[in-house]
Length: 220
Image 1 (cartoon, rainbow, N blue to C red):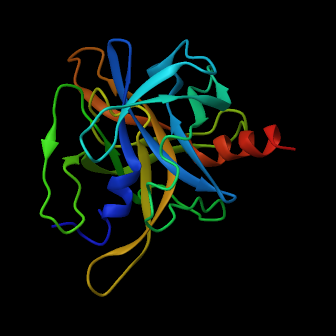
Image 2: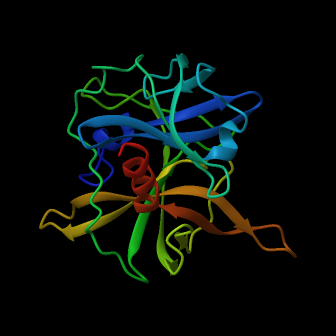
């Protein structure tokens, strides 16, 4: 059973990304009446317009799509696609981007991804998908927006290989039933390790605002 926060709308919009021998995560996002697919650039490094990309949505079936690159930044490690294969296939509520939403240090955040080498399955015939990503939780440990071209978020949470490109959410307000209203704030780029132990310590993420600013600039 899914909670009001970990809802089927979020899970339906998160997909596993397969490019060459590597895997990652991506998310379908609605912005200005258009649906985009966002992931980390390093997950699909070298991809070009017209290339074929394999993604695995909630159905658990791999789908090959022809990509059209809308914008990308190899340095900032994100890329935005559109493709026609999923047109009309996500009839759920929008997954909006709220650029005016303020989030702060120590605020709890959720992030979602498909860990490499692990597949979780579910489904009860009531809209819960067959292939489930993992949900993880942490606090916003650091924010840096001093450089508009390099805004990042650091989560105090140990990530997994395969989460790169996955979405990060915060809950705008708690509801009486224990749920809340979730908003997309960023995209996971990497999981930072301890140099001595090799253990994952933090999830490093790109602010969604930087990505949407790039979208706006490219569509002027």
